[in-house]
Image 1 (cartoon, rainbow, N blue to C red):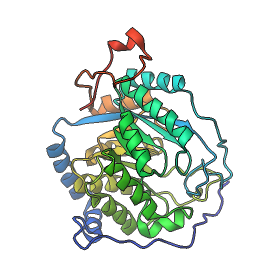
Image 2: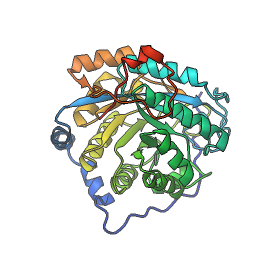
Image 3: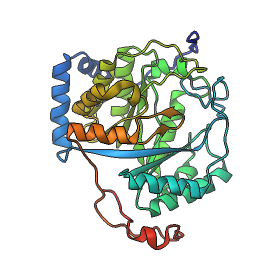
Image 4: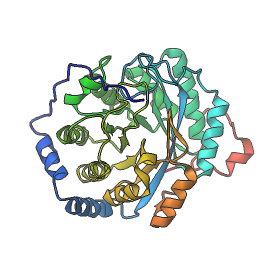
Length: 356
């Protein structure tokens, strides 16, 4: 049974530099183009930026689930919400490595590790560093999403071999305060700045369908495009409204508006991997096909995204085959990280690889 949608009251102000490359009004004008014209422009840019026309497969694992002190209105892991998600202990290194090997065997080239919580503590940081080193040793590209970071934490992850750090802006500055009250927009931007300072690549996007207006979707894309530089990976999530969260019962977004968002992201961030993330199962094959046409060239691949169901891996393979889309392939052998324990012994020596 649905429950009333309850938003927080205080929105954060939106601020963009006067010299912004993509002001909100210009991004909004893209959203308002006729649908076919928008997709045509996005596809032209996509073909120029990614002539190989491949799809990146990424797999996400939840290292530590539930019990989060933040009150993000979309998240079933928040301790503020009454959901079926229970707090769990951190996964063991062996469990993570087994999942990484399976992801690699299924064709994934990037392995993303997520953990609930506002920010990592010192004890957990040591475990995360060990996991990053071990997964990197399998030849997979590594990504982590562990909450807000301090300078030294970002530096430690970089030194452990992390490639990407995910920290989504979630929504526009004007809508953010209605979704989350335990931290603000600047907190997100500060962590992204620390990640860049440490030399890590950025994975940053948002969630579409949280009751925001089209203008607010344009504000989100404008914020992302005006990061300097803009993110190398841009995950676009379609809200999965989970019972017990404040956003359960929110009016569903028109699927074509999700396609428009993908297309606009491709136009304003031409070199980024634009990823279809959570909510793909609900969109169905036809809308996903339109998203690929609009410039999406990365998907989260596997059966679960943290605490929500994702498209089944076999279904993904069938869809990509029907559309004639090839997946990104590994391209060179990579030496093991210095000091890395040989977790896979001779078995994995023959499978180590790196991603360009």
